[in-house]
Every structure is written in C-alpha cells, then in structure tokens.
Length: 158
Image (tube, rainbow, N blue to C red):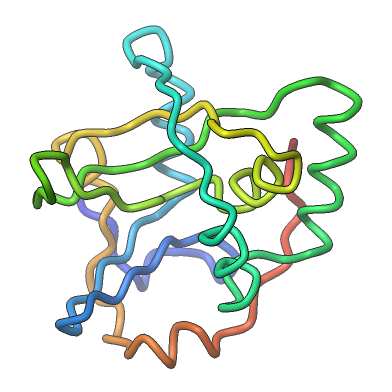
C-alpha cells in the first residue's frame, strides 16, 4: 500500500517529522489509527514515560491545541482513561533502544503530563506495520516551516 499526498483529503490528519539532517517523514495518522483499531488483539500496550518538558515543548512549538487538551482533560476526568498513544520505530537506535516517532497521541501526552502521570499507555509499531501509511509526494519542509504551520482543528473523538 502506498499513500499519495494528492489522494488525501484536505482535513486528513498527518504526522510530519523533520530530522536534523532535513529528512522529512509524513504519515497518514488516520489510516494508522484505523489499522491499530483493527489489529488491537495482536498489539501489545506498553507504558511509555511522560516527560513534562517534552509536553511543554509540544505546546510551545505548536504541536497541540490547548482547546483540544482541555477537551481531553474533561474526557479523562469523566471516563478515567484515554486511548493509547501510537509510536513507530524509526529504524535507528540510541543507547541500544529504538528511536521512536510519536505518530498519534500528542494531545494525550500533554494531558498525561498535566495530570502528572509518569507513564501513558501506548502502542509501538514496527516499521513493517507503519511504513505502508507513509505519505509520498509531500513537499519537503524545514523544521521552522513545520513549527509555523497552524494546527488544524478537527472534530476529534475521545
């Protein structure tokens, strides 16, 4: 399966990463999320550390919407839990551990930090699980261009 940029709808959510070397990675997060939902019985939920400094950087660098974080905070206070976040192995390792892309769940990460939870539930996808949802044909961005992009407000589910 290949996801072409021109085939996506204007409001389809996309994870974008720009590496220090300028490498761009773009992933169709809605498609990954749907794949995870279909494959939940075969996926392990792991606890990933919540770093308050990283959560603050998500707010500072325009990764999350404060409005959406408030909505999720109300949801977790009412229902007690959130859907697991989704990470993806990048293919590189640091100190013997896989480097990860945080593909889905940035708002959940900030909410966990706000609640001072040390860990959040997550799925960690191997490359063969997430690469089919990598988007081709997206014009390359710089880190600054990515940070300067406005957050698209969507009708999020819990």
